[in-house]
Structure formats: C-alpha cells, structure tokens
Length: 213
Image 1: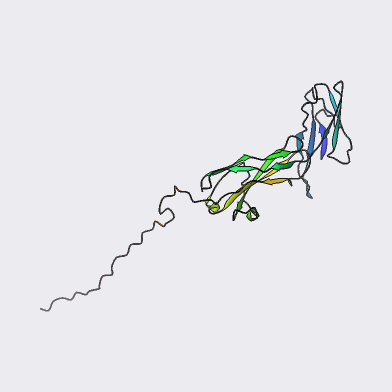
Image 2 (image 1 turned 180 degrees about the vertical axis):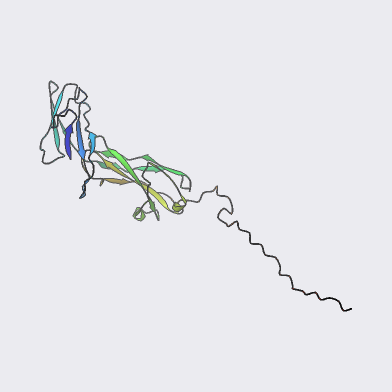
C-alpha cells in the first residue's frame, strides 16, 4: 500500500477545503502485483480548514494517518480492514429463467468506503459445504437461472475491500436458494425430436405372368 496526494508535492498531504485529498493505492500480492488501484481516503467531518496529512510510520502501512490543521485541531485516521457481521441475503424464485438478486451485501465494518464484488456459486445440496463451484462469469449482483442450475441450490459470495489491503480475502456467503425447478412455461414435447418416423405395413410381393393363349 502507498499514499499520495493530488497536489504533486510528492508526499502525503492534502487540503480538505481546497478540493485536494489523500489517495491510497494498493496492488495485488502475487509475483506480478499488477496495476495500482487508487481510492480517495475518507475525510468526512475533518473541518473546512487546510489539513496536512502524515503517516505515523511509512514502513508499516497501512497504519494511522495524522492530520494537523490551521485552527480546527488535530485528527487521526486509522485504517481498519473490512469485516462482515451480518451475512448477505439473496431473493428470487428458484425456477429456470427467473432472476436471483442480492437483496443486501450484508453489514460490514471497517474504514470507509467498502466496495463489494460478487461471485455466484452452484451447490449440489442445501448444505453450504456443497457450494464448491463458481459459476463462470456470474459476477454481477443479479443472476438468471439456467438449465444447468436445475435441481441445484444457489448462493452468492460477497467480497469486501477498502483502503486496507486484504487482497480480496475477506468474504461473506449468503443464504441458499433452491432447489431450482424447471421452467413451467416450457411447451409439451419441446425436448422431443420433430423428425417423422411413420412406418406402414409391409405389402406382400406379387408377380404377374401373361395368360396362356
């Protein structure tokens, strides 16, 4: 994690009343960390006068940001990782063709602002232990049930992230919905072949010979 500001001073400083702010940047934790993801650090309620920020220790980020002002006194802002206290909830009808939706991502604690991402899972029973399959590309807050979901249960896994680098490891799972039934609007015989296969009786063979003169 690193900190910067948009005033081009080269160190963490910000003027809350001038439109400038402190930004926190995080990357991945793999061999190739990937691009930096920048987010504006929450500064609500810190007064209207110029605020100058500094980390208590640049070697142990994230940590506590100290802020001194012209006349509003001093402030301290400590980065707190996200944590879930109330599980997410999903709603919808468990029928092929219907849409399931995230009713609530749950209740989360930690430094503002917490961002959420979603992954829908297919389960083989009503037990959470059976939810081992991530549905490919099902990463929105809604999901349309398909034939592959028939007789299965569904849930969503919510990941919470903020300025404290947790690398997507803080997750919470929703309730299960299922088992998924077939689409009742499917026409009878829709899964049958339309190729005709009518066979008639076999006629006996006959031969014709000219009559004798």
